[in-house]
Image (cartoon, one colour):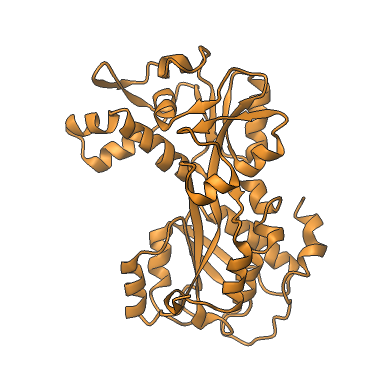
Amino acid sequence: MTFAKQTASILAIVAVSATSAAARDNVQVAGSSTVLPYASIVAQLFGENTDFPTPVIESGGSSAGLKRFCEGVGENTLDVANASRRIRDREIAACAENGVTGIIEVRIGYDGIVFASQRQGPGFTAFTPADIFNALGAKVLKDGAITDNPHRTWAEANADLPQVEIAAFIPGTKHGTREVFEEKVLLVGCEATGALDAMIASGMSRDAAEDACLDVRQDGRSVDIDGDYTETLARIDANPEGVGVFGLAFYENNADRLKVATMGGVAPTTETISSGQYPVSRPLYFYLKKAHIGVIPGLKDYAQFFVHDQIAGPGGPLANYGLVADPDLAKTRARIEGEVTMDSGI
């Protein structure tokens, strides 16, 4: 469903009165680069389909966004912090020190990616993070030493995989799911193969070694895709032996053309992703200042709009971009409606 075609239905989602008087009339948001594309989509739709101004969405990372969020209360401070992890206890304490005590936690869905290939293509049915790292890492552990990746076929990365040339189409560095691909696949695979320990043993600091684990080969066998998943699908269509990284919803909508692999023995489903059983997933959040509700026009409306089924639910624009819908969206909406804060004990 295109943005333009959603107008009529979305107008019914929120009240569109923007009559409140305030020194600042637009919602200010910053934080996670992973949540950024989802928040940007919501902000665009919110601005187009309500009488409120389009929220201002900035990136900067989860930690930086939460730090700004915790600077205090008032029109010169942030209204919403996006985060690809839960707020930490020390951040809640920093908020409290600056008078930010009423924090509403909003889980928008899950960041979950799947590995899929042509239905009639090679037998890519099961992967581990170690397989992906051995196939795509720039530096791998070979015969006890760290070396440039010599693997040309998947079978060279793991003898149980098909004997076909490595061709992988992965989220580009600008894509919202690149971070989960790096953290949950490359880094985990690097550690599982012993490459991380070998890098550290060679004299690298742990931070430098972890950064090196995230580097992918640049010889054309791993291709970054910065566009949406339709571009990845086109690459798979053109390459019968290719493996692509997709959002779960996109795969499910194209299951007649693609087959999905398990990761670590777990098949990707909404249930295994939302439970955390599927290893390449994590919950995504934003945090809202209760003190700003009723002061900054449209703030509560924006939060409700974000987690409406037509926006964050299955088949909505966020799922089409890669977000895995949260089965508990109705509970999240109820918490926003009731302005339930983290310190309420509910």
